[in-house]
Amino acid sequence: MSLSLKSLHMSGREVLPLIEGGKGVAVSNGESSGAWAKAGGIGTFSAVNADSIDENGEIIRTVYQGKSRRARFDELVTQGIVGGIKQAQIAHEVSGGEGRIHMNVLWEMGGAERVLHGVLEGAKGLIHGVTCGAGMPFKLAPLAASYQVHYYPIISSARAFRALWLRSYKKFPEWLGGVVYEDPWLAGGHNGLSNSEDPKIPQAPYPRVAELRQTMNKFGLQNTPIIMAGGVWFLREWSDWLDNPEIGPIAFQYGTRPMLTQESPISDLWKQRLLNLHEGDIKLNKFSPTGFYSSAVYNSFLHELYDRSDREVGFVDHEAGDHTEVYSFGVRHKKVYVTKQDLKRIKGWENDGYSKALATPSATLIFVTPEKGQEIRQDQLNCMGCLSQCSFSNWATNEQWTTGHKADPRSFCIQKALQEIAHGANPDSHLMFAGHAAYRFSEDPFYANGFIPTVRQLVERIQTGD
Image (cartoon, helix red, strand yellow):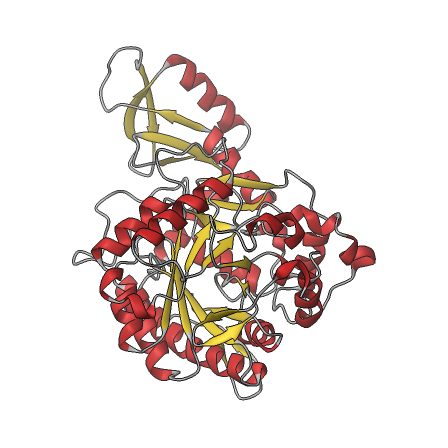
């Protein structure tokens, strides 16, 4: 193989050290992950609200019947288990028993443990590993071990892995298949930036991964692979990581490139958009209701969120300092006090059609059109608890079923945004997650003249170094 790309023993079998990233809602499914496994690597389907399929091969979109969030939440989890089992079955059939199949979940998704138990129980023998990020999945190890499948935590620092190991993973070392280092500045979707890290000042991955290896070695994990995720495009650019004792056993995870394959389930319109991205088109932002930073294509959807945040002013409930001007809003005409300068800005926004004032949990008001205000309110009412806690709707899977805070209209319904784009809606009008290297589609000669490869062609291309 090129570049001394050696196979690794992962999840019970020798495989190429090439892994398909398990992208969220319906973007990595049984077809794509099965094809990746068949090509000799590890395919990963997303078990985040995975699609159910009927006897004719058609996707069954969930129609929620529950009148309460709690009832809709139970429907969401049930559908997610059924869909996850189905995608595992498809992946197994497509792979023909080659490679390995993993499932991916977000620890902070609603009902994560229930979904994991349900899918692993219902698809026994078909799933060989579980990757899990978005939070600190302490309970992942005992859960995976109980089904005798390997687990792969997704972390962004040695410190995070150390905490997971000492609190939980050291009790189940035999089932730790690998550690996914996801670069918080380069990976697509949600990113693990800590409060001490500046989103505008990226750090090089090599020293961070070398530190992770040092930490793992202290725990006797010299032979446990690290999986580099985020920013990986040409393997020749990572040649100094191969056979490198500072890095140790290494595999590479591809999240963005598999989206542009024949087997990828995303729409043709979305694929064409990927082919025409330019450097700088992907933005790291903090609009997600999860509270995490995330990377997405700057489109009209993201533009509206940035615009919304620009129309924000602070208020107080009683006259104080320079907050001397009365402003009334809402159906009850609640009176608050704003500054003279902010009142002038408010009048300007209202004249431009942004006449609906929405209160945030931060004692501020944002201004949107009446139509957007109605959409935000309806999306909040339709909440089905897709996250363990959601700032947009104030849902939480705790004993009170609420975060205890007001819903935040500065965010958005992530379930709606991801479901719509995953099932054919205009990618410009919905949340389009992408890694920061996605602009390379337009520069890579492999994709010249709009060429879209099969998964096998892509895996073979990657092995050449390109």
